[in-house]
Length: 411
Image 1 (spheres, rainbow, N blue to C red):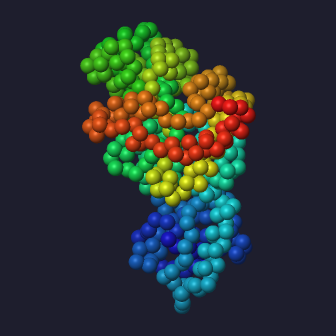
Image 2: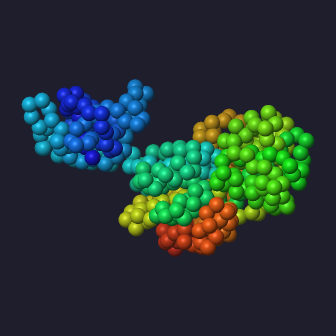
Image 3: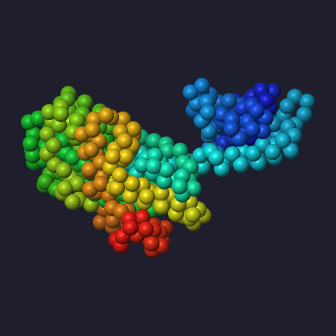
């Protein structure tokens, strides 16, 4: 990985080839500029030649000025000015100052894959300062697909991921070296929403039900909901892959589908549009790992203190959620991007009802995930829940008395 200042970049012959990973550091204010510059990720190199200023995300924009970009420093080698090589001492100084700047910049990315209450502890821990309290300065990154978010984890772009259990188990069955370290929601938080003429789940026979995508937790919820009411997916009711909640509501309005599954507060919007909420799967008690924290095995082994600090931050985030509802609702308002207080309160109440103080993964919830995946991944049929889970850090924290101090009582 390379580090190079703008002064050097401007005098280099550019190639079309790029290699992932370096930085352009704008050469402003001398050494101070190295620590506080606007950073641009990823000049890339191949064969010692540099293509500066462009990355997959494009050239740095005015709107991004002032944002610090996280990464890993290294010495500049092989980049020439006209008439000579860059000073090795200058490279060392640049690297050392960049290292020092990381103490003040964001340490890493933490990815979450859903803008719903089910992953709200990720935002609460950030907004309430829990991560920072425990020595972590993350940048939260939203990735709108569980599978894409899982790819970011596996590739090393993030050490920690808030996501559903299904993508994690599916990836692990495929050979990914990952573990689930927390189970934030161990039940389906879905509501079955139907067209105006349908008032019972049994009336979905012969109808079309919209889901986000096959393999998602919503897909699993639809399968279990239908079977709970003696309807077989595919035979008695068709499952149609459509997209997000807004797309599915639009499909209902055009009668392309007659039902779908929504989480809070989307079901309230559906009711306001005149649709019926005919089942609350959370009340049916169907265990399922809907929301979890996943990491790579190497993080558990090589960075246990990072994982422990992150876990303490999440536990304090859950405590904040449970004990400071008004402050939490303000955070929900920011991330859910709505001023509808009824919707915000409903999301909050739903989440508080379902999340425990210590978020262990429920074995039955994992078994439901495996059973669901078994239809498309035969290896899931023989797998055991415990092979995908690592509670070692969470258990150690609990044994230390951390939770008793946090809640001021014996659990």
